[in-house]
Amino acid sequence: MSSTQGARARARTEVTAAIKDEARRQLAAEGAAKLSLRAVARELGMVSSALYRYFPSRDDLLTALIIDAYDSLGEAAETAHAALPDDTAPLRRWTTVCEAVRAWALDHPHEYALIYGSPVPGYAAPPTTVPSAARVGLLLVEIVGDAHQDGAALPPLPEELRPEAERLSADISPALPPEAAPGLVAAWSQLFGLVGFEVFGQFNRMVTDRAELFRYAAGRLGEGVGLTGA
Amino acid sequence: MSSTQGARARARTEVTAAIKDEARRQLAAEGAAKLSLRAVARELGMVSSALYRYFPSRDDLLTALIIDAYDSLGEAAETAHAALPDDTAPLRRWTTVCEAVRAWALDHPHEYALIYGSPVPGYAAPPTTVPSAARVGLLLVEIVGDAHQDGAALPPLPEELRPEAERLSADISPALPPEAAPGLVAAWSQLFGLVGFEVFGQFNRMVTDRAELFRYAAGRLGEGVGLTGA
DNA sequence: GTCTATAACGAGATAGAC
DNA sequence: GTCTATCTCGTTATAGAC
Image (cartoon, rainbow over all chains, first blue to last red; front, side, top):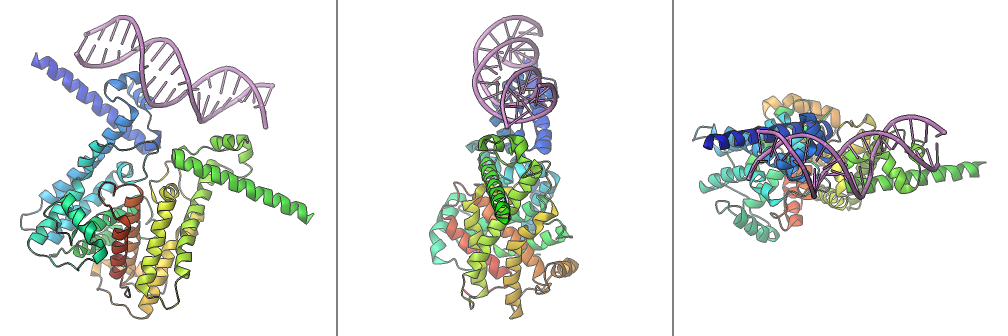
């Protein structure tokens, strides 16, 4: 009885995975805008209507791919961070996570484009994507929050930014002091500026040693949010 | 005779502009990947083959749109910078240009996506785009180069980055000291990280006062490349 | 209950003959 | 430049296999 259910569930997971794999291949070849349920079905030797047993619509398939991409990136970052010794200095934690993000993005350029590139026309990501999308950010928050527990130095905020800083700190984490919040959110976006320029080819014919430039920039980004310790 | 040519040339410019306008409309509606010469022609009441007298291929139309977008952004940045008094401090020059980039991007999100978003599958930008693409970067280089003429303070570079710094400084501008080059290239990409996150909606439901956060982050970015002067 | 297949819809793109 | 025949697409209704 339970073995029957197990076999069915297993088959379902396998087909779901095959659909997503094929969809990812099309993502790479044609881009998210041209992702087509029919083409996926054709390539898998299924009929298009059969796909609706697994994904209620094309947008749901897209959403699943987006969540998978965010989770894959988040897991890569978390794994790299977790592999560090417990006494690792905050700045080193920070740069390790940054390097993991960069490595994942260079390894998965099309999935990177899906989550941090141009929005897909006509598609709006549902709230379901938020927890996965937040993973890298929360990891950075954790690192900065821990460092400030131990008292890190930060320049004072301009008066006009104070309300936003309070809001951010309250929304994101109680461990994040308001003085650190705007700088951290900015650094978070700037990290992806760095990565995006490399992945999307803006550094072509300009930067040769991109790994070294990234290492330098990520380090300065970490220092900018008050982290220390080579 | 010359009046006939003038009229013809004028007509040609007008049709070319109409084609690009319609193409931009489609860019907004469907995305760059789905830009289709036929659809543009249909919307203009022309037949698709007629378009080929103006743009030899879909990719050429795309290239024209990309160059236009880079030039539009470049001009916005240059105009904002040129409007400043001659004795404006370097840091204020920097933030003014950054604000102009942000304002243009928020005003032209789809053109922003075209030039700084995901690459269009199957399309590679030809070298013709480089001069237009470089305008904002060169403006930032000019500001930082001028400031360093007057002697700005910068942290020393790590030894491993020295070769890349020399290369960058040599390739980009003689006015840019090697110690400033990697930081400037990084800041340039980080500026677009900030802008991209806002334009592409990554700040949704998180940052409320985005203008204020940007002002703050852009200022710190400028300080990071050695600029001073409120 | 769970799945796949057939067939069809309305809309749109595309290729080629004319 | 026009027209048509033939593709694509997402999606649904329905019927039948396991």
